[in-house]
Length: 366
Image (cartoon, rainbow, N blue to C red; front, side):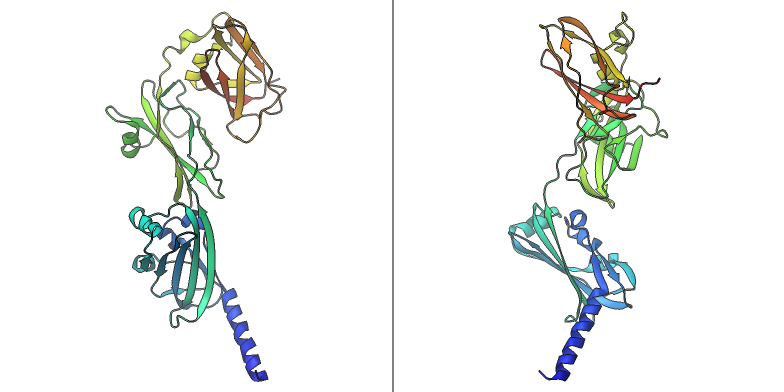
């Protein structure tokens, strides 16, 4: 190769590299790589001048091979960040492959479980040979773990008219994930699903970061004797990632006063506390239960709702005698408990049943 040709070759490579470095693709496959329409949520960062370009997207799956190829009409990108115009997405040519995975996507409009590769090619509209950027993203699509509600329990009866709503975090964890909480009244002759779909929400809270919602102060309090349905959705950038089942509960505690133990102030029946769905533990827990069997250890554990990964350690060992038991658990010296955090105590009853008691912990006042 002559020196002149070598210089021209080096110059060409330098220009190509510079052009590619000036353009990049921003895409979040974990969020948008689950549907064909989601692939158009890509954005193109352009550091140079105005260009007329086209875009090709090729989707492959590790086992099935090529799934689809998408080709757009020409569109313009300007310096800065560019989203794909909606008209370009609507008129794009989508060529689906002939395999089981592609057929599944045709029927259901979303990608099944698999290991996917998304190749984006941006090239000048005037020449399909002059590629500005060629960028590939990978994503493994796995079924999300169920988004389980915690409290109020399904078909439970509670006393609190402004209950704390809690649920398990959506898994797998994802940066930027937020929750939306919906709560509606169930009218006569409605089931919970119909109520959530058709009734005006009492609570419709978006942008919830943690896996719990303190009842919004601007929402009407619940009414005794009425039933309610609620559901939690996990989303990112307006795209739903996961959704819980729809649970229902009733505000009803007419008989709760009968369960209060009058002989010793502060000890209330475990059944009353569970129905009440609300307890403030100022340094200690006090409740009562009946053991109709022989003397035995009380089996219980405590989970932090605000921080489920935190282990609650050094809980005292307690003995149950036969008959009425008044349980006192001192938590004030246990550093596992944080002020104004919510917790759930799970208790194994002597008859084999289980009870769960939610409480708000407060440091004892001096």
